[in-house]
Each structure stands twice: as structure tokens, then as C-alpha cells.
Image (cartoon, rainbow, N blue to C red; front, side):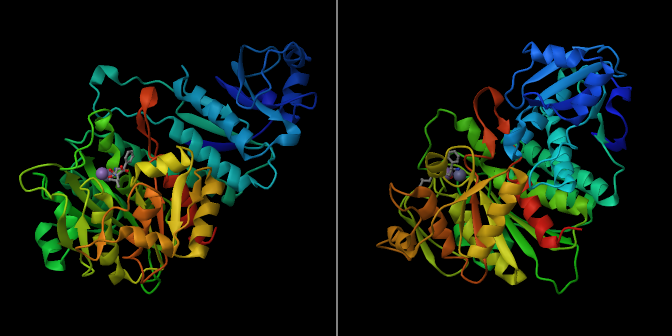
Length: 496
Ligand code: BES
Ligand code: MN
Ligand code: ZN
């Protein structure tokens, strides 16, 4: 997607399509009023007849509107002016984005960024528009034949502002695009079939990303992990013919002595459950069990594209969880890199087993903070549904920062408690801990397990089991939580 910013009178825009926001009621907004005057009141008459629903995001497409230079006018409802807030504004932008993604023309003039929104400045609005419009154009075609790759949709968006744009405005739009580009990588990796997207494939993809973005990339193989004593991570890969990898990507945007932010992403390229085999229904969706890893790839890419002045390290433990003659069995005991021993009571609780060794490994980077991202528990979906990601942390300031980044980006998270009492549920009669905590509070006991490996730094955990992909007709990776993480890192870098 190509973006440019322009200023000028809306009625004079010579374009295949002009998209405009309209308020419900009589005061419909400045841009609409200008267009209505140029059309001799024809637009107001149409709306008075009830042609456009008042609900934010509803739309009305007019062809060859009289008195206007555009070929098409897309009117999009913003709801009541008094109740304008992030949600209705986003609904309206998303509505244009959806239409543009399938439109039979290439260029569109977009007049919604200039709509004033309480508490949100132009820079914020431009970043959000850049991201949402670019992301809506995403299509997964890597597994489709040539005939099935339609060349549809808008590819050039001209963002119409009432005044000339400054440097900060242009940068905000570019940031939005960079985040969408990161999301696109995250969605591609998530959507790829499990037989293609293996741990080795992810390692190759990291090397490629390293070349593209000038990152240092290291890949530890099984032998290197054995040397480090990563008995927990390695135990998960034992049932599979695919060798495990530990992928490390270094982005250096600040001074060498500046402590890095470290992201750790769960990279189970397929989760059968192992010997604690999952039921068959919807098991195909367990190819998405590497979406945490994919979000680390996408965020590293977005940050490198933006050139943020921070140091960022992306770490991906990658393995395939399969049943097999050498697979871990319920009751097996393994020793983690930290020296703590783990009784594997359920081989389907494998995410925490690969994450715990990665979380010990990253101590060597003396991180400013560590955020892990994982499709960790079905229990998180039961607790929160599929709207927010689950957030648990050992540091309140870090948790608050991530929650705020979720709000600002519309990619929200919701915090769950991580009190000491939960630790008792991980008791094992045979090892330092069990890898499951019983029937209740599964998202929390999973995080409580990880908390035993993160005592040396400020740490937060995002459980994205409910947010990383959609099921049903719209089955596919969402690219979340790349917007949240990117916003968090933009904040860490200090805006501008
Ligand atoms: N990858 C799954 C979690 C998951 C399940 C995410 C369904 C999204 C949809 C994870 O490895 C898992 O299997 N977790 C178990 C843990 C249990 C055995 C304690 C779960 O959630 O059932
Ligand atoms: Mn599992
Ligand atoms: Zn899993």
C-alpha cells in the first residue's frame, strides 16, 4: 500500500473514490457540509431520507455525485458526535478499510484522519489509519495457485488533511505502515501450514529477516541447547522428527550499553498434545501454536522498519509437539536450564516447557524487561473470551505500560492476578514442580509456572490463545499482538 498526505477542498478531489466520515443528527461535520454545499444540498436530502444508518461504520456509496469532482463518494457513519470515541472512530475507519480492500479501482482519497477525536491527536490518528488501512489489504496467498491471486483492491491512499502536514504527521503514517508490515509477516507465518512452517523453516526465515533488516541472528541447534542444559525445551521436541531450534534476533537501535527489551515467543509449530493427545476436532488450528513466535518476528521487523532508537532482542524457542516412540510421557521428570526439575504430568502443557528454558537463557542479556508472548492456554479463552489478550506480570509498572499500549493501539490486554497463593497448585510429589496446576485458573497457573523462571528481571506474559487467530469462515492469523507490542516499544523509544 502506498500512502501520501495532501490538503485541499474535499469537493475538488478528482479521484475514483472519496471516503468521508459523517455524524448522525443535523451537525454532520465540516467535510460533509462542504460537500453538501457543492452538491446543492442533495447529500443532506439523501441522509434526511434515512439512506445512511446512524451506527458507526455503516456506509453509503454514491456514484457520480452531482457537483463533486470524485467519481464515487463513500459516506461512512461516525455515530453521534457527542459520543465520538476510539471505538466508533475505529469502526468507521475499519469500514473504509474493508471496502477499499475489495474495491474495483486503485486509488482512494481518505478524509477520516482529520476528524477530531477527544483525547487523540493527529499523530495518533495517522498512525492508526496507516496501520488499519494497510493491514486490511492483507491476503494470504502463499499456498494458493497463480489463478487464485486476485489483483483487487486499492493500492494508493491519499490522506486528506485540512492543513499542510508536518514531519511528525508523515512519520506517524509511516509508523502505521511499518506496523502493518510487521503484522503481515506475523500473519503469513501463522497461516503457513505446519508441514512447511517447521522450527527449521522459522530459523531460515529469521536469517532472511536478518539480511533484510541488518540484524544479527543466531540459531542454536539441539547440540548447543544440550550444552546449555535445556532439558525442558528439548523434552518437548523428543517425539518429533523435526529438530528444535532456539532463534535469537538482535536489533541494535541504541548505544551498546543501553539495556535491551527482550521478547520471547512460543514457537510450537504444531501442537498435537503429544502423548496426552488432543481430540481430533479443530486440531488443524494447532498450526497457529507458533503465533507468539510469529508476533516476535513481526514486531522485530516493524521496529527495524521504524528505526526506533532502542535495543531489542527477539527470542524464539521452536519445536513440534508430537507423540512418538521417544516422546515424553506423563510422569517423566526433566531438568530445566535453571536447575529446577519439572514433572511432566501432561505433555499438552508444552508451551511453558519450552518457554522456561528460553526465559532462563535471556538472563545473559541483562534485559531492561522481558515480555513473553504465547498461545499458552485454552483456559485464557474461557476466562476472557477472544477480545483481549491475557496479561500477567511480576512488575506493576511494566504491566501498566503494556495495558496502556493495548488501549492506545486498540489491541487490548486485560490483567489477571499472579499472587503467590497460586504457586501451591504446581506442587509435585516427585520434582520441584509439576507442569500443570489442576482444573481451575489455568491461564494463571501457567503464568505462575513461568514466574519461577523470571525472578531476575521485570517480566510480563501475554497469553494470546484467544486473540492470535480467528476460527470459522474467517479462519486465519490476526497479527495480534504486534500493534500492542509496537506501541509499547514506540513508547519505550520516546515518541519522536
Ligand atoms: N496450545 C495450547 C493452548 C491452546 C488451546 C491455545 C486451544 C488455543 C486454543 C497449549 O499447549 C495447551 O494445550 N494447553 C493446555 C494446558 C493444559 C494441558 C493444562 C490447555 O489449555 O488445555
Ligand atoms: Mn499443548
Ligand atoms: Zn501449545
